[in-house]
Image (tube, rainbow, N blue to C red; front, side, top):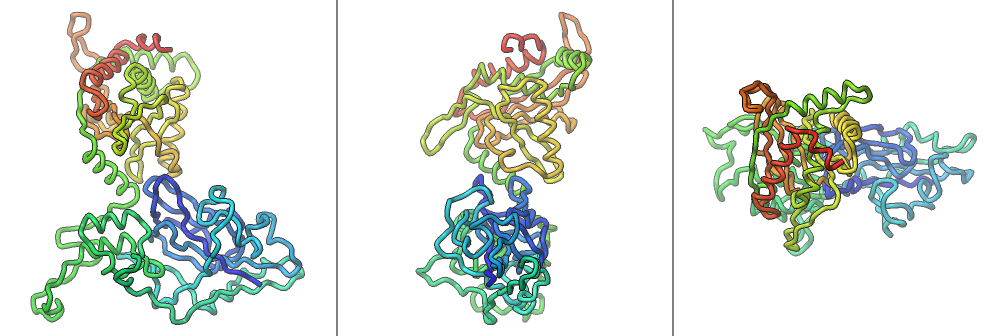
Amino acid sequence: MAQVLEFKLPDLGEGLTEAEIVRWLVQVGDVVAVDQPVVEVETAKAMVEVPCPYGGVVTARFGEEGTELPVGAPLITVAVGAPASGDALGPADPPGRGGPAGAAEGSGNVLVGYGTSEAPARRRRVRPTPPAAVPMTRPGVAPATTHSPSEAATAPAAAPLAPSGAAPAPVAVPVEAGAVRAPHPAPDGPVPVISPLVRRLARENGLDLRQLTGSGPEGLILRADVENALRAPAAPVGSQSARSLPDADVTPAPGTSADGLRIPLKGVRGAVADKLSRSRREIPDATCWVDADATELMRARAAMNAAGGPKISLLALLARICTAALARFPELNSSVDTAAREIVRFDHVHLGFAAQTERGLVVPVVRDAHARDAEGLTAEFARLTEAGRAGRLTPADLTGGTFTLNNYGVFGVDGSTPIVNHPEAAMLGVGRIVPKPWVHEGELAVRQVVQLSLTFDHRVCDGGTAGGFLRHVADCVEQPAVLLRTL
């Protein structure tokens, strides 16, 4: 007898509460193995392929490409059969994972390889919603794919579930013909919201969630529902409908307005907006800057690369200078715990670096940068940059930084006042290196000059510490031999 199991969008870690479907990797009727990726999603931090913990036949998918789902929302349902001979589904289906006997075991709603030793006591069976009540919709996005009972029960790939010579196990997909969207919650009942971001957005805008009808499964209220409610103008009590008014304005299509195109702040762009806004709200930052003669640093790099071996990048040399300066001024390698009113000073340097990709600005993190030499830093920068361009950065690659290096000189600008990468305490900005007139050894000469700027959290240190750090960085840029004292 086949059993239909529902796989929900798992907790992807790092405080992520939702993800957008980028690409489905399976179709309804496909046979999937345990741990096989079934969908590619985009979170606020990275692109992630989500593996399914069940082996069987896909009977339904929830959400079209471009749909944003909260953690815990259904992704797919899988018909897991019990072959007549009692054999397992296949080599990829370990005990306790594929068949009904193992349905009560496993990790529950988390990524494969992570989670608890046993699943929740109850696991409800999927009830695909008929097309008339498709739950997953949002402006400009097609509704989620669903199937009628006859279509789901006759999934074409059910036969491979049974071993050779055995009758194929039936694929049972129970459907309630009258399934409808959940009504408004009772005045004293729970509000159908999973995401804390949705609750915060409603609270900050004074919106009563009990007055909304969610477009998610079983009436779940999504962020899109709240945003649509905030955009919709409130009609005065007793007023005529807009259609009956002779001069009523035509409602713009979703995503547009009378003022122009509306672009949702979501994914990487939304995460960047949230982090920068939080940084400005919470961190009393200050910026200091200095011009430095980088001629000797450029000569030192050229000499290193001329000596053979892997090429050393300029970013790696600047990173090496940063780690040396942080060893002398550890106050800047810290974070502020506002709840405990404490400064947390780190004994390691996880160095983030700003990188522009097609998906937007990302800040990959080089772990233990203080323990790497210039060659090792060059290799790690190259690896993370390539992963960022290909969209393969994981949430772990983008979190946990303690200090950030921002080389905005690649955009052809000389200076900037960086915004601190919350919850870090400082960021060093590097402008372009260009020939400029400079007084060198008492004479006017053309030298390679760069502007360095440091934005820091004034709660962790005063201007003297920040100025000492920046001056040490500038000294190392002007005289790379200063670094020999820290090697």
